Image (cartoon, rainbow, N blue to C red; front, top):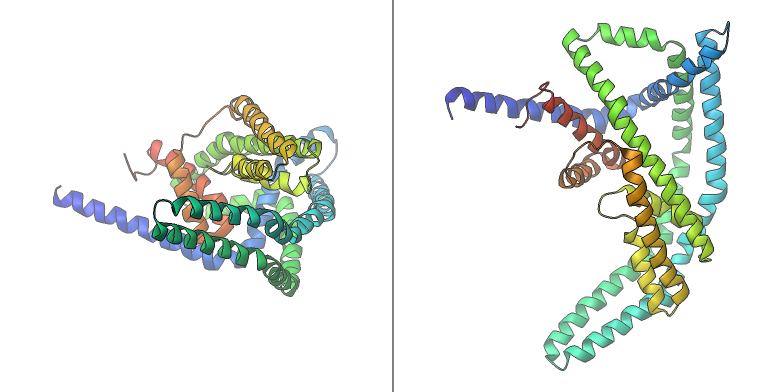
Length: 358
């Protein structure tokens, strides 16, 4: 490696570290201050196609009037969804959470204790010391799970208390977001033109190409997986309802969300649940859950290629790594945005806009 190559390498590393430091500062410290503007801008951007579609069929309608109408319709739809969410899903989810301690201590813990006794009885035939060590490990694990289950109610109360104490701040943020989304929808073109004038032409060109890529490719992929998530939700909801399982609605919602995550999938909940039910001799529910898992998996493998169509090409290792890094650095928001950021970086590198790797 020549001296010039070393200088370029050092400069590239310094540039990457600088970009990371700026992004970290923005996402951790600054984004909370401007979040209403960002959310309002994204809402206005998402609603623009609807506004354009309506203006085609309304003669004499002004763009501002249509924009206000579309935003009002959007928030009415959101209010209805929130009402349904709070009325049905939250109620059942709360009941499910409060029933977990009784479910664990009455059904799961006795199975674990029997398993511990079986391990000890068989290991004592080989080595008493090994039996005691394994038994201690299992007992510590059971005690840890018991402590977690016992603290669920306490943690929920603490979260509810924190949410209530911060409610005025959340309410003010929501009000500002609604107001900003209305004004941005009305003055969207002027705002975008002003922002573009403040940025270099080369950046605007690269940003426009990236925006087109995100809309045509990534947004299509996101919409496709949202459709798959809803299909999975309804499949599991119908299956659990047929099996007469309690709390079918919140469980189906949780599994549908986990199904989008790498590695976890529907089997992360359905298979252990089915095994526990079979051990408890609830054979109808246990084998029914196995059958439901197989049905969901088969339907997803058939439907996913047809709906998604275009695959971005991120390796699963990269996807899991960036999601974990995003979660650790920026919380749940980072978990969602990290894969999209990685896809954009890959696109810019592949098209020669940046050169991070070969």
